[in-house]
Figure 1 (cartoon, helix red, strand yellow):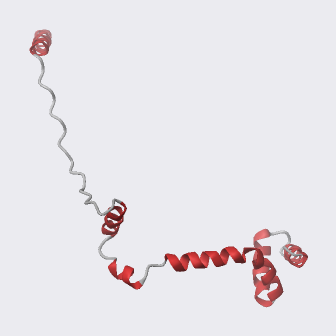
Figure 2 (tube, helix red, strand yellow):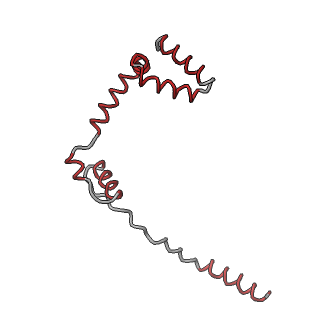
Figure 3 (cartoon, helix red, strand yellow):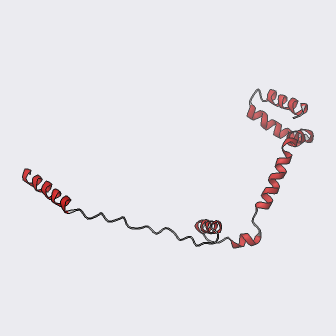
Length: 123
């Protein structure tokens, strides 16, 4: 930045008594009246600001694209996923019932019966 901007920043800090937030607000206010200050502050950032404006302009959907948008947010997500999947149909996952427990072996059944009967005898 230029010496002019540095001097103005020092003046703003002095007037704001060291309060950085207030000094920044003062610089912003002064930019409204001082084109030289505004230009010197913006000049380093101007190329990026211009690139951002172009990026936003090209990213905006056209009228045809906006007309195509329909339905809920879920519909939009599904459409976007289908587009990325190459127009393949994406079926929602159907929840499956939990697997049935395996049948106990005869030996296991006898062991459980013995445990249950011994518990009954103690009670």
